[in-house]
Image 1 (cartoon, rainbow, N blue to C red):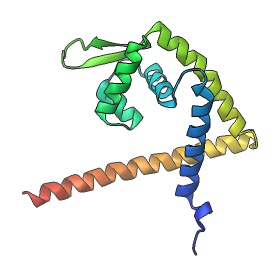
Image 2: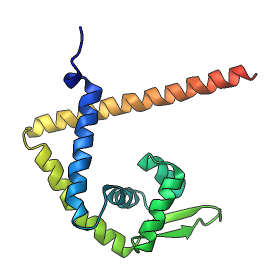
Image 3: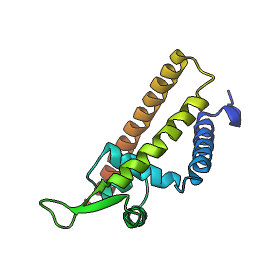
Image 4: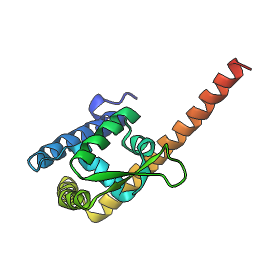
Length: 160
């Protein structure tokens, strides 16, 4: 059975995420923020003291791109780098008071947008959607790990 393009799960998820990113960017632009800046603040709010490499992984960007974001937000006074206690090559990144205030300003906008986009669903449907998407996400993460292991074994076996 052929699945039409508009009902194909990958397209639906991708289109919904793209629309959500675009609308959110429009809503925070007037406040002088970008979506990516908010995402950095959000991730550091959840995980204070992350390294640049860890932050890049959380944001799904290259380390250099994460470094440029960190530089800009540090210039604005929204975050700060601190040397790692035992490894001077690593900087830990923390929100400043101004960074926390900005995160607090944008958080309600993000929450209101999620509330608005899910307004057509009952509480039970929202819970079920969340549960189902978490299951799909976990399976994709497991597949990614399995694939990395398969690629690692294949690569090693070629050179053994």
